[in-house]
Image 1 (cartoon, one colour):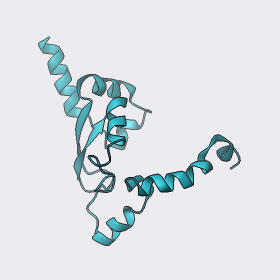
Image 2 (cartoon, one colour):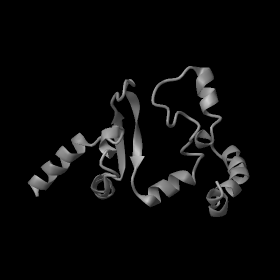
Image 3 (spheres, one colour):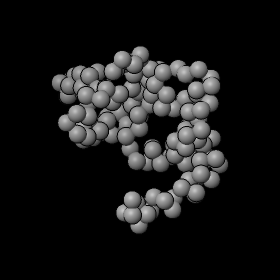
Length: 128
């Protein structure tokens, strides 16, 4: 049992979801399986990659139920407050970033999504 714990700790210590090299060989299914079983709400420090400075880190959710809960509770988990921003931006740039749908919370996100949804249905996408 002790060796399993040691192996888990060593695996956990080398895990880096923010490093593009993690995905060079495709989706690291074993990594995500391990996370779901041992660390489903994983704190990921952000090391500097590709000339970018280190970020503040983020929580990586690996279980569907956790992702669904977060997605359905924007009053607790906001998309507008600093998500997907790897470096600190000047206030003007941050305001522009927050105008992107991925960085919006309901009701703004919901209203824009209703406008965009018809353009992403299979028939519409096939026609492009």
